[in-house]
View 1 (tube, rainbow, N blue to C red):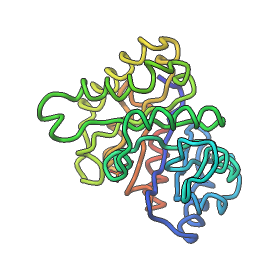
View 2: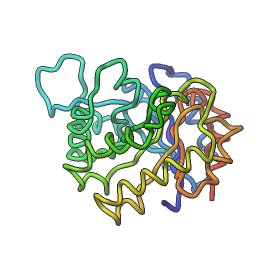
View 3: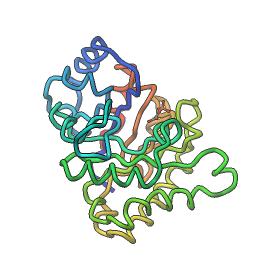
View 4: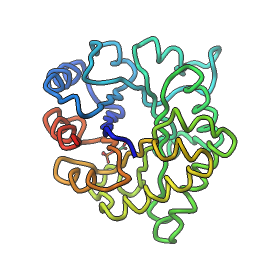
Amino acid sequence: MSAKKLIAANWKMNGSRALVEAVVQQLTYLSPDVDVLLCPPATLLPLFPASRHYALGAQNLSEHEQGAYTGELSASLISETGASYVLVGHSERRQYYGETDQLVCLKMQQAVSSALTPVLCIGETLAERQQENTEQVIAKQLAAVYASHPELLANSVIAYEPVWAIGTGESATPEQAQATHAFIRKQLAQYDAEAAAKVRILYGGSVNAANCNALFAQADIDGALVGGASLKPSEFMQICQSAKD
Ligand code: PGA
């Protein structure tokens, strides 16, 4: 459990120069008691002025260091934009671009070797939850990275995003999220107990200004990964302010 919460914005394939300006303007008034991470499309990253109010991240990276991989972005190219984080294994990448656990593990290694902090996204589908396989699915997604590379945990952020809650308006309940976060922390302890106690575990999936307080009150919820609501500057700011301790 971390002292300071982290609120991350995942703009997905949305946004514009105007949205960058609006969000930068809003976050000027942010309290220093909360960490904020903005993950816009990579082409917008250089438009953000350096600021003590937020860190920047990309939404994806290549598993390769460099070379003939048309259309891909390496960890070092991402770093050069001023970004210090990267989302890895978002369910949309797993679902629409065929990202496997093995590929996710390679991307995690690339990120950390270029000093980017990876935000490892995990979560079960609706069918998996209905079959009561949530814990099994999550344990497998974590094991695919940390069983072979436990050293990555000390540099990771985890985002638990049940697939059925993403973009649906139906968030997990605070109790459901807390139970899964506690399970994640317990699983991670077998790879590195000290890092597991400290790692930030974010909840993602239909987080908004109305439901975030109850989520943030849970012992093992260290922040949020916010999609849709992060595109509305004043609502995103409200979510960030709610995360103050
Ligand atoms: P949502 O997206 O907040 O729109 O559900 C979250 C995410 O996919 O990271």
